[in-house]
Length: 565
Image (cartoon, rainbow, N blue to C red; front, side, top):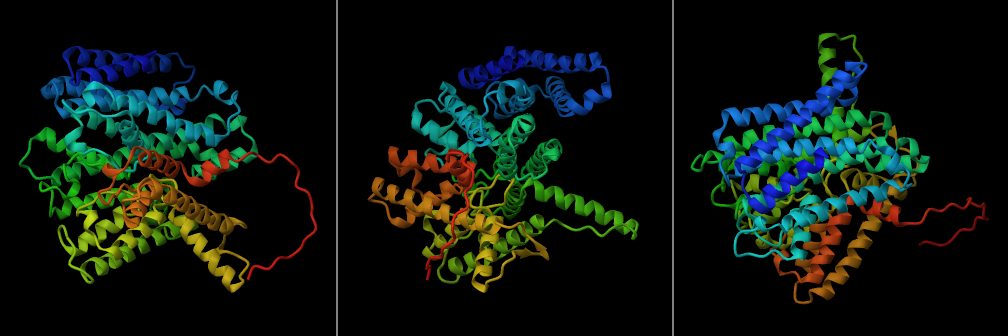
């Protein structure tokens, strides 16, 4: 009931009124009070207060945060209730969003209703994404989401919602000019849910369904969430939530300092928060008319550096970041006490960091040569930073500091390759993933050398993982080939280069475009929507979920060889 009340207030506030009225201001305060009192009473009535805090610690922490924020806004910030201001909408959105996040996660603990359905984890994963996309579409169709005089069709609303939830960044309309502050806050919320909420939801679903899953489902879900130890799911959720919000808050603070001071406080805060969330979630949406190539932030090297750092952190994955943090703590202990064991990063972490570093440096060097040696390309804050920025953003994020439609043909092919490789598993990035690309490459090299074991960093990887990585690459190439053939028929007047770029950008959830998105036909937009959805879920997850389960016992058959070459 509390969640329904909060959701109703949000819909009325952002969809129909478009402003924070005094009534909504105090109604939100009353809901925050109820939200906090519930936890207070439950803690008081619990047999063990310490046990209650261990079980509901995240939700109690959320309650404390929203109460403190709301009290501070009511007492110290008179602008918080000032009409249509972006900052007023954003501050209320944070408070209301915190309550909805906590209440939504608590609802997942009612496992009896879910396990009774006997659904495979992949269906739950895809269904949760689809539900959020539909809700986002409905929110974007609300009267106050677009500027007066403009109309957003149902297909374009679905396209924008899918692009935001799947943290892609492709847009059929200019986000700065077409959407009101209300619409921009909705897009920001969809980005945050798509980047953080889906990961959190998946981890919680694994806990909720743990007792009702078969061994096959546990293994499939473990691979899907990049967490091999299901006993550590709760710690992983806590780390993801805390690290995400801390990173976004720090990024917003740094971006605020980097933005020019010629605009008002509210505008700078909103732009800093929006771009921090969009960058960390690897979404690529921007509320500036020309993105990061806009005249207001053009040649701003510090801002581009902060954006790059946020993109990289969001694309590495929670497992890598936790492992690096644990390694650093152990190193500090060893410095104080040399008798401590020498820390060692996991193979997964070392592989992700090595491949990511190689792609960042190698991609930047290749783009610099192709764009500024072979031709006189456009730069923003220097040729080196321009090359490095697009090496970072091409793999996951989709921000651009120059006109992507004007880059050279060699650079286009380099960017397409980086987009296909993508980011790392467990993060907000898309593509085939760095670990898949590296493992498939090493496995292929071993096949050529007739080497049986797959060894990385002096550790032998499990049998079959190389074949699986190679299968993902082959499946991805087949999917892109079929979709390109269809897109070619739907848009015969567009060149192959622009079509391939748009298709790969959608499937890899990057969001870069050679100025083609707004020119797509309705049928082509539907195909791009499908690719954004499948790319965010993961092609192998979709295929394994849709494929029927083989319940027959494997039969031993006679062996016979065939000729391959």
